[in-house]
Amino acid sequence: MKQIINSFTFILIVFISGCNTDPSSDSRVLPPARGQIGEIIMVIDSAKRKTELFQELRKTFSAPVPGLPQNEPTFTMRYVSPLNLNNVLRSAKNMIYVATLDDRTKGGRALLRNFTQSSIDRIKADSSLFMFSKQNEFARGQEVLHLFGPDEPTLIKNIISNQKRLRKHFENIEKKRLMRSLYKAKEVNAIGKRLLKNHQYTFRVPHNYEISLDKDSFTWIRQLTDAVDKNIFISYQPYSDEDVFTDENILKLRSAITEENLRDVENKSVYMDIQSIVPIITRKISFNKKYAIEARGLWKLSDDSRGGPFLSYIFVDEKLNRLYYVEGYVDSPGRNKRDFIRELEVILSTFKTESELQTEKQS
Image 1 (cartoon, helix red, strand yellow):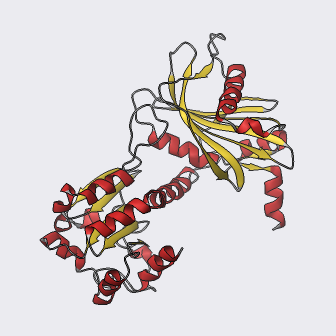
Image 2: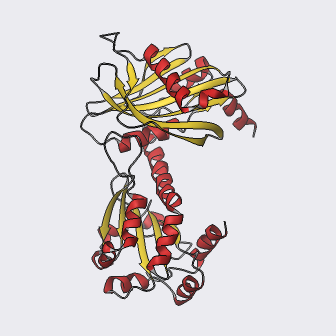
Image 3: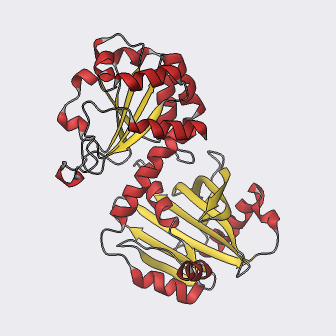
């Protein structure tokens, strides 16, 4: 906790040179941030790209997304020397600046000119200071993360110790952007109202999603285009035993749900199953403040004709004593699927039960 507080307190004394530090400045006068979804521009001296520091940065931000059929990095990294940084690159949506005080290269010295002497003294005195973030530094809607240390070994140590935190920082930023873009177009409120009326739960349904199947305790919602088939289904049943939260029983539950409800329209003998090319990855999480198990893995049709990644959550609504299984899955042969799964993750995060909505109204 001390490290986190120190890092953010440090914002007040660092980077007064070369940055917009006027708190009254209006970000609306800045150009809009640009860049692809999931892309980060890392500003780092070219000499550092042959070091252990660079390798740890790659491990942190380019780690493979779990549960996908092909290796896809968490973020698509683009690297640029500070000597080659121009206005176009400087307006990227996501940026990371990497600097150490012991750098004597021309590019390294260029990065260090951003620091005041007082901030340099603080970095030397407190090795726990290694990061801070800033929004709208050079462009509107931009997120900039600064990583620094007195020397490379110290910065490497801090990066390794905070790997998940650093990666989560940009994951959360990307999800917020995606949330805004998903619901910027017309939202399908009628579906959300129908779900609330018939099933006592709802979630925000983006434009062009439609109900494919809706019956007692099961609903399937879908967006089908030429490029990708994105799907969400929700199933629920009375909750009886916490053993359902074991990995084995979660997979049994999923198989029972999909075998009953997700069958080929033209050939009813074909149904959705789980493929074992990669292991199912589960973890305990808080899903809208409820204990839940998240699972990521690969699905397939029983005749092996189609397949792709899925993301699911299983949790309990205590007021209704109801066990929910909610899932998003993607079918998009020959295409990368990271961004599609991330979209479904954002949509599922809007899931609310009727009791949760009532609690929100009362608070």
